[in-house]
Length: 460
Image (cartoon, helix red, strand yellow):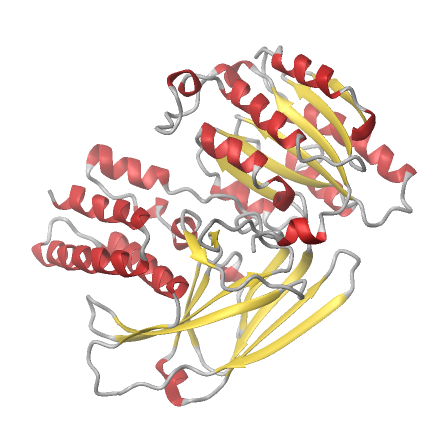
């Protein structure tokens, strides 16, 4: 389950990794729990068959390898019948889709190198890859969908008039798209305004169709102006959201923009992705298309009652959490699964007070609305497992999701507190390196090795 990963995009910590690799120094501001969670796949549990939205929880009681303290964790993921193959089984709603593509001069630049691409693909421009991604996306449109496309640089123009996809000359669209070349400057507001006016007119003329989704996919390699005045990009996105015209903002070859993510996560129906490689871009626009254009739940509130929450990791808007409210999320999208039944970034983690082990039930509740505004409430309880209090090196993990999440937050804590000028601190890093490799082998995720590689760079 995603809120655009979590409706916020891939919170890449590439800058953190690059700084260590290039300078052997740590920028603690560029590594976050949310960011590192977004780079990993987590076990999603059994495919949900009935519910529009539900939770899947798992617990852990574990000795911290560095502090030797017993720690208690609760992880949970959000699940929907639309996740994985469910989107094909139940089908996504018909779609009004407007593509707005940046063709300014900077789109002639290439992506960062992809090791899994051939030499010709590695040197392809952002615009060339964007065109391929859009062509892949078009293969997912249905006869009932409507489609149009706007190009913008310093001005905006119609590339394809908005209309029914079934009636389009698809070969003509593909041929014209292949001939597009970069040019001019960048005016995002003009591009967004032109596309939105066209699709809004259609919505106003067809208000009786309440099931149809309307979305703009806005592709640019420029960082937007985040001002909030009238007529600014953010102002326009907010106004369109109120009219159920939602925006997917895709930063092409851009580092993750935390400020933009925070703003867009508070606008209903909006999601944001930063794609930093051509392979990632092609996958997102093709394999994940149905998931990123299908909001299923709005105004989600998650509560956990029964024990004190010590810390919250990987949860959007958790800084607003009060008392038992763990998070509030405006929009939820379904998630794609990989071959191991895992979802990318799909894990929330709570560190609980030790009193949670006293056998007292934890009560977990969800409240949300569907796309028609109908309210839903769910409640269930869990109890932490019993264990031998005298056992010193206790390691009880209910599944690989909570085990991987705990390992990752401990890695982040290590990085944030590592002082390379102190032998004691470096020794802790060496011990954690051994722990990380051991846990990686148990979890079975070779991707975790890249975190150990960073530790070794810093120590050597």
